[in-house]
Image 1 (tube, helix red, strand yellow):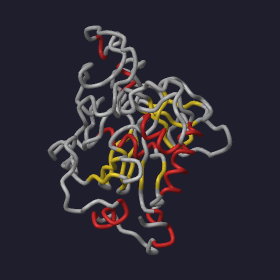
Image 2 (image 1 turned 60 degrees about the vertical axis):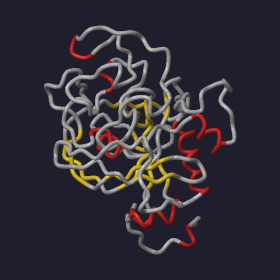
Image 3 (image 1 turned 180 degrees about the vertical axis):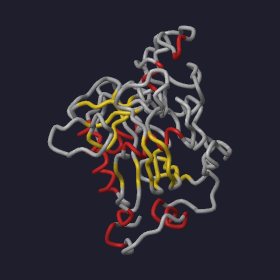
Image 4 (image 1 turned 90 degrees about the vertical axis):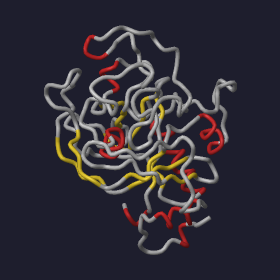
Amino acid sequence: MSRASSLPPRVSFSAALLAALFGACAGSPPPASAPAAPVVPGGFLALPERFAHPATGIVLVRLPAGRYRRGSPTDEVGRDTDEAQREVEVGEFWLGETEVTVGQWELVMGADFDAPTLDPALPASNLTWYQAEEFVARLNELGPPGWRLPSEDEWEYACRAGTTTPFAFGEDIRPEQVRYDAYYPYRGGARGEHPSGPKPVRSLPPNAWGLFELHGNVIEWCADVYTAAGLPGEPSEGAPRVLRGGAYVSSADQVRSAWREGYPPKSDGREYGFRVAWSPPSAR
């Protein structure tokens, strides 16, 4: 496997590069979980390139560079004051197809969760931002270097997958699409049940870019410091960090693409998890 010392000074985002770094064949088909590649609003394609990290099984999905309008319009139901809209440009990067799972956490960290009977396909949760960062650091030790938490701009870009609606699935959601607290539906819809916990990853439909459970399931830590204006904040010790996506305990309006929250990095709510991103170190 390539290590930092063997990386060239500048690295492109070609499929050949990822094949070399992750031990995958550039011409191999995506996993069975990968959807077809439909055109979504904005003309983007759901890109089929996926590579599995051989040491952990983490599957990465290539996301294209582009621009989008982050945040929510003033008339979006459930909108909060920290969702001001602005144009954002995102470079090409790779994002975990799913949230990091219990099995992946235990493999990388060498530590079991308190409940050893947990399904290894469940998303790892009850985790602080510091623990998510430690996981990323260990991935970088395993190689190839370039693992990190996604930025907030990248997270919303990935969640939307070219859409401008409150959810990647449209103007509304249903429990068979998203794991959220359906007792609190969107826009006054019919009430459902309180879920007992998250679902195993890949249990629900992916968005148009083939990413699973960005809405709901467990809320996901991002790299950024939280600011009410959504602009970059000073990364001082203890500064609140961004959480995105909502969780199985969240109302429907709290799993919208634009919803955001900030908590101290030592917070470890039962529903706090994360997914990882990757890009060549020279591209950052």
